[in-house]
Amino acid sequence: AVYTRMGSKVMWECLKQNNQWLALGDTISEFIEEKYSQEHPFCTYTSPDKQNFFKVYFDWMFIQDLRTSFVLKVRRTGPAVGEPNKAEKAKLITDWTEVDLQDLHKDEKCPICLCEFHDEDEEADDMEEDEQILHLSRCGPHYFHHACIMNCYVSPEDSNRLLLDGHLRCPVCSFRYGVKTGSMPFGTMDVSKYQQSLPSYEDCGIIQIVYSFPPGVQGPEHPNPGCLYSGTVRKCFLPDNEEGRAVLKKLETAFQRRLTFTVGTSITSGRENTVVWNGIHHKTNLYGGPPRYGYPDPTYLNRVTEELANVGVM
Ligand SMILES: [Zn+2]
Ligand SMILES: [Zn+2]
Image (cartoon, rainbow, N blue to C red):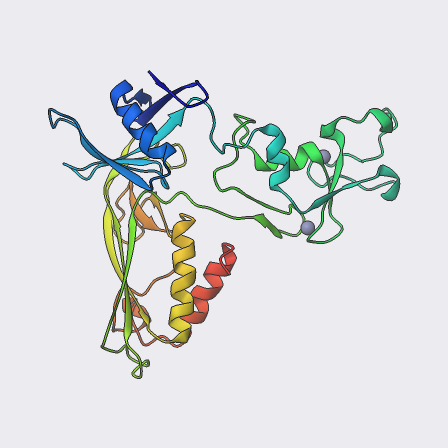
C-alpha cells in the first residue's frame, strides 16, 4: 500500500469505460504518488514486462496509454490535497459581506427561495449559518440566504463537491464571481509563427495554433460518461499583430480553463461523442472569408474577444 508522509493510505485510480473507478495497484500507485508529491507536471511509467506504458498528466488528471494514445481520467483517493472542505468552500466566494436583518427592508425576499428574510418564527440571535444573509458585494444590492447561494455553487448530489465549472454568477444580475472552467477533455495547444500573411493583414505574419485531442473515455461532466469519444486535430490562424497576439493570450487562458472544446455532437458532421468547439470561434482557413471560416473578416477579432469575455476571459 502507498502512504503519504502523514501516514494515510493513497490510491490512484482510473475511470474505466464502464464508468467505474479502477485502482491502479500498489506498485503503480506508489510510482505515481512519488512523482505527484514531488510536484512533477507529469510522469511516464513503463512496467518491467512492458505491458504498461503510460503517462499521467497531473494538471489535467489524465492518464494516457502511450501505445494507443488513448486517455482516461485518473484520480487520487485518500487524504485530500488542496480539495476544499465544506468550511473552506464558503471562502471561495470571497466578495460577499454578511448582512444584518435589521438593515434590510422588511419585505425583502431571497431571490432564490423567494422567502422573506424577516421571518417572525426565527430568533435572530440563534440563526444558523444556513440562514445567514449574504450580500454579494461586487454587484448591486443583491441579498441571498447563505444556504441558497451555496446550493447554487455545490453539486446537488454531493454537497461536498464543488460544481465543475467552479464559478458563480449573481442570480439577479449575472455578475461573475470566481473563474469559469469547462469540460474540455485532455489535449494540447501548440503555437507557432510563420512569415506569410493573411488577407487584409498583409503587413504582418501568421500565428498558427494546433489543437490536438487524443481519443478517450468521457468523464462525469460529459454527455455520455463512460462512453468513448473520438479525438481531433484543428489548425487555426490569427494575424501576428498586436490585436492577434492579444487574442492568442486569451485563447491560451481559455484553453487552460478547459473552455475551448467539449465533448458532444458535431454540428457539421452530425457525429456523436466527439471533441467539438465550445462557442469560441476560430479561423480554420487562411482564405475564403467568413463562409469558409477564413480571412478576410474585419470584425472577427472583435467578435472572438467578445465571446471570450462572455465566458470570463478578459
Ligand atoms: Zn433563500
Ligand atoms: Zn448581483
